[in-house]
Length: 236
Image (cartoon, rainbow, N blue to C red; front, side):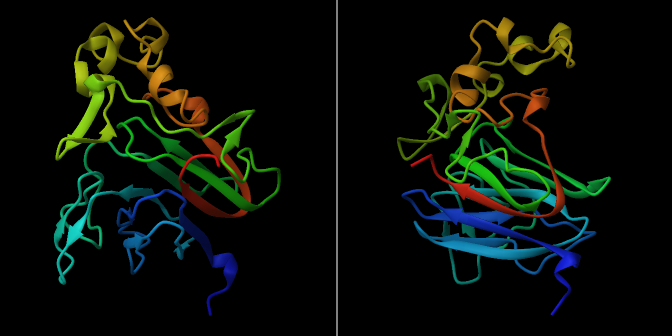
């Protein structure tokens, strides 16, 4: 068996009430043998990634695959393949991890920059300090809730809302898309948008998550030889 100091463990937990097809994008420099998993409610899976690995983990919903692993998902689709060979599509909640990046530290976050399809929180173990996220998904007194998505931002499949897209995708315009005179960190201020959807939709649901592109306070660091638990679900 490989020395545990040469890899990190990532556990994905489905604490939601629907089946989730979890996925991670391939990393050419640090490949892993499996990039897709089917998790019924209450199920989990743990896999190893080598030191220096970086990537995204997300959940796909409404999937159907044939015996060859070819099919389609309503959200988070990964090129129509059960074993992911690319990146997620559309409005998808992401866990982003960059391991062993700088001075023995990992960097990680939950991102709703591209929208959201599932509630998610990340816990860490084997770190030198305390985990900033509680074991049930709370951060500084605020806990993980489902996104309440305005009708104009809802992504629908078969007449049902399945995800929440960004204000940029829903409404366009320089302000919501942080383009033109709104481009860049100094100018892209959701508090000055016509409606602060970054806060009202995404930040209020997951206070620790990236709610727009420059929401840099959402990046967390883990020092030590950290392992990760990514939970799909809200605070019980």
